[in-house]
Amino acid sequence: MSTQSAQSILFTHTAPQQAFRLLELPPDLAELLSSDNPPTLEIKSPAPSSQDSNPTDPPPTDTTREYINLCTPSQTYRIRQVQSSNSLHILRPSDDGIQRGDLAVIGAPTSTPTEDVLADMNLSETMTTIAKCGSTLELHTPQEGFDIIPILEGLLGKYDSNSDSNHGNTGQGRLSKHTDRRSIIEGVFADVPVSRAQCERAWREICAFVLPDTGRGWVPTAKVKIGVWKRVIEGAMLQGIDLGKQFLVGDVWKSALDEDGEAEWPRELFEAVVRKVCEAGDGASIDQEGCVRWVGETYLEAVAPTANAAVGRSEFLNAWKDHLPEGWREDAAFSKLTVCGFKLVFIWFANSMRVQEGKHGFPDPTTICFVNDDDRQKLKKNLSTDASASTAAKKARNWHELFKNQKRQKR
Image 1 (spheres, one colour):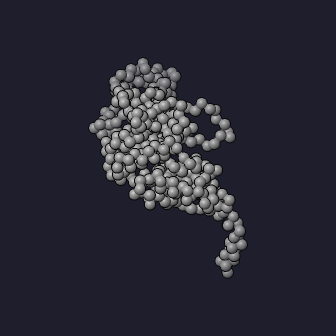
Image 2 (cartoon, rainbow, N blue to C red; image 1 turned 90 degrees about the horizontal axis):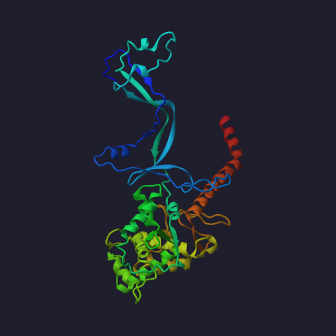
Image 3 (spheres, one colour; image 1 turned 180 degrees about the vertical axis):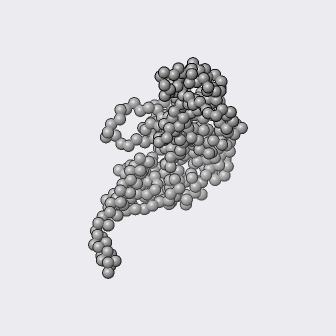
């Protein structure tokens, strides 16, 4: 209060104190909120687990742990509580509404009436603490990012080639059900604790789609995705469509229909698979490098999901090429199988799987199999543990070298 006129300021506090939580904003979010068109923020958290915790359970992941995220339309921040050694007080300057009868003087002599103590005080110059905060909330983005695909897949039905219902359709009446489709997607995204933009990217990544007749969203299995893609290749060949150039998805879809105008797959699924490897828009344009990698990984997941189901490398490579346009066949190579921008890192272990920064493993020198995210993290963890143990053992074996160096220094 740089404009106070009194020689002293009356400091009071309310009882009971109000409940306040202080949130520290990062500079980019503070700038966004102070802009002319600030966005609406959402507070999201994962759905509570119905299972009781058990000491023998594995460490919690983004699908099991409890947390709260603050989301803008395009970004997500994890909210965490930070304890402070110094309490923070929320102050409110006087609004001339304080009456002497509302105040009680702390530490005043019991023989002196409160009215006499307050007689010479200027109540217009008063500061009141209305809340005390022993901790603050801060926003941060985890270094490992937000692994939301397992959460999203858990909210969707699994669509495989053995579905009981006949979902094949030509797309008639799809516009009339557009509102239902959007409401279904909105309902799914509401339960995924990240921003809308991140939800949409994950939705596209897993080729998710909605069948309004079923009232829910679906995620196809790897077998279904590679089957749909094979139909895209065949349809493009029949229609004379060059997938290396811009094309209309509707033209490829027409080639997937039989004489009765029916298709083996729902059009929603067909478009979801094409959308995964194409840019958005009416005219599709395929990302060739990303498409080649996705086809290889998806086919491997479909035919060799575990080490016990591993297939021969030559067999896999030839099948991979058969699922690509003719002009792309030579692009199929093990070096193209990457994840998160990391190329293959080959490491041999005695009688164990060959590990790499990718979605595949080499159980032996002649076979290959798909490695899912959970197994890959376990393999990387074991690799780190083995490397640390090896280093420690080497140091233990070289203890005599340490004494040898010490003797040299004494001389």
